[in-house]
Length: 142
Length: 130
Image (cartoon, rainbow over all chains, first blue to last red; front, side):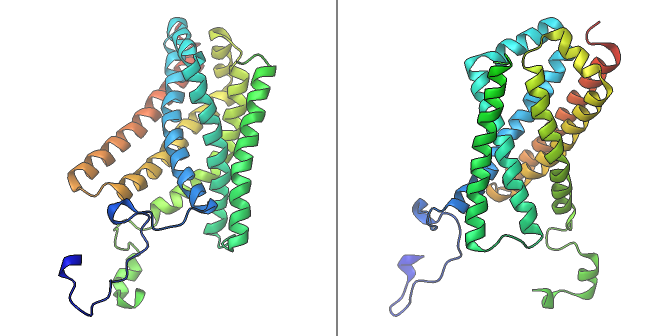
């Protein structure tokens, strides 16, 4: 379109998409933007977690051998890394979901409030994840 | 915007997507339920992390555990189906691909619910594989 631009024509205004032509990020990186992306990413991670959760119940219903295999896979390094990511995803998505519920009631849109609650959601996700894994380690769950 | 809509269109309240606010409300109501169910699930996972097959079966035979585990899998599937639907609708614009992914998304959510709830009931009512 740009080559069709005649003399005296200015560049047309564009709507604020996240990314535009030639993969330029239109928006400046900001904590609230990062939190919004993380909400989606952790939601996808929890989608996988629900499939693993159903697999847990399925293997338990299939008997000791199937359940033993499940424990071996979930107890492996990759399994534990997945569970660690799942723990953070659950706590972060929960905390950020409460931000969303507040927004739905018209609360928390002021930039300062939005920044504070964004940082709080990330901090809660990290702190609760560490707490759960320390408890798991102390109670012999690892 | 609303100035351009006919009175009948406003009364139907379905908007341009033709399905109203059902998904919006459903996503939020399930979110409220999941706050409690997910916290319960983390606590349960900590308890189950250091037990073997027999103890896991015993745990799931407790009525409250079986009820809450079934609710968790059903409500989570409902919630994640809507969430993934929004992601597909946001990023996939080719109609056949979009339709295929939306159907796949629905099938995954229903299969997770069916497999999860059936497995939970089987263990809870019969004590596992025996």
